[in-house]
Length: 453
Ligand code: SAM
Ligand code: SF4
Image 1: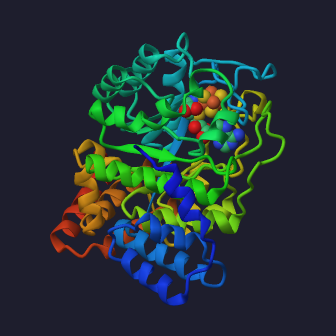
Image 2 (image 1 turned 90 degrees about the vertical axis):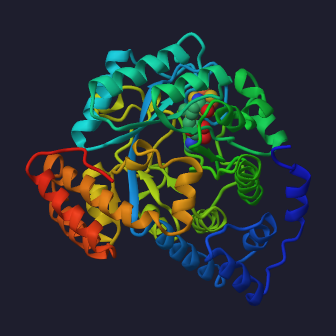
């Protein structure tokens, strides 16, 4: 059994706030970077203000211990909005007659990637609607191969419909880094209601997507629940149960846990969010994911506004998208096309603006992709991360990639980038590594690119 719904429901029956002493014990345990049990998480879900502050603060410390100041930046590249499913909440659903439909040609997809590359992105998340005659496996493979061949984008991740093992094997060979599938809701009855028809109707097939990915050779997996469809306490506990299942059964924690929150979408059948999640609750959710699965990248997209995205950096988020468009062809067209978009974004800043802001807040904007390319994936990555050993590598690599950005693509953020690079170098404890990074920075200034540890 992947997740035990009865156990999760039973754990949620108790909604009493735990004592300060119990919260302290759980947070001390979290600081050891070994994660939390479902019982621990169920207790934290009941904590209210002002004790919640302690959870947020500890999550910030755990993030710092595992990843340092580093905040990973990426953009989604939407390939197709022609979907055979009918998810009530999504602008791409088949019965949305107002949607302007489009599947990018391979050439158009490459042009989108080149547009993003010119802005300084190094990692992209390919996103596709589900459609066996449009965005099928052969199409996705052609896009992946063409982008790697014709651009300097260094890693492609994928968020697409669950697939059979044979298709996943081909994606792995083609060089997909992280394979993401969000369960949307782990609550079976709500799942059935939200996904009335199409291939996505099958809850179990979706829930087992990660098992098939592991069978196919993937060891970097991305999970998440779409917040707002059902009680967030249930979804958080179930997401962590899913993460723990992957660890217990296969020995690997998920590489990322995304925190998508429901947004308005053109043609959505949900006029209101069924189970709204407040900003305060959202921050607590980010923090709990960080404490429960300390080595996972906790991903907060441009579904959230700039102010909240600033705040979540202090409570455990480690990856953010920036400058995103959620319609196919959106980067080249560079306008707002709500009727072709999957949902409305809330943070409309460019990558350069986000980088400047992240650096000014004292974090290290990272465009690094080294771990995937140096083979530090799956349990290797998590072992290094939980022992704190990945931080120095990350500092050096983040400095090297930010230097490339500063020279090749930065606008107003240039000064902030240079300051962040200096600050990050100063933090590297290992003198040999620091000297090596300094020498590599000079090589980048002299025109060399793509140097990493
Ligand atoms: N079509 C594939 C699927 O559904 O798995 C691929 C990814 S879909 C294009 C990306 C994700 O966007 C979905 O998994 C869902 O969680 C999220 N999403 C859909 N509609 C949304 C909305 N209105 N607001 C926020 N996120 C939404
Ligand atoms: Fe299609 Fe995915 Fe949107 Fe559902 S969420 S309608 S599967 S694109």
